[in-house]
Image (tube, rainbow, N blue to C red; front, side, top):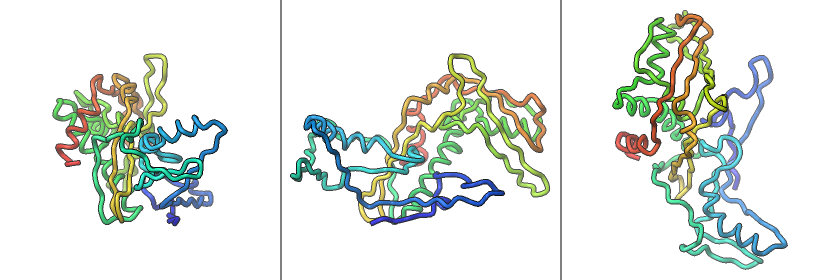
Length: 275
């Protein structure tokens, strides 16, 4: 069975599909309840190797667009059944490459596919918002949104402020809306001040979501992360703005912290969000 959804209505998938003056592009996503995956090779040992590693590979991998946000998630069927040379087998619990045991997850009940992704978006926004702000406040560090607001809205500097939100994914451009309708907001741009061999122009989120359907309308969303965020530690960025602001031409320079551990951060998340 295939369930089709309008991609523009799905959170965490894509932004504007087409420029304002151009015709909008219609994009549709499909949710497959099951797929049959077939491998063919003249080398039986290769097929055996694929069979051995497939459960772990699927659990650690999503496919296609927006993989890190839970899209393109597939796993071995709940009966652990596979077919080899026309015969049906069951994966043993003691397989050499068992699926990884995720330390962090949360459960979502009585939800449609669209609602699942909305709830993941809410959680991800909280990670990059109130949770990472609170985590660094306890370490005596003000987060970047305080410094940006004071600089570009009030023309004032902020001490002990660091670029922390972007440790969970760098947004090189941001739009800050002005709640007062009569005034326009401003567009922020962040540029890495290169100090080593590489210049950071893009940094995807190190956090990975793996939604798995456990029963009807019930999902477990497993969370993992990689170590790439360490490349962002101790880096400087120049932040400038275009539009109505009071930040001046020189903008604002903020550094990322030199010390940050995602495992320690998620201990804080568990304590405050009860994952």
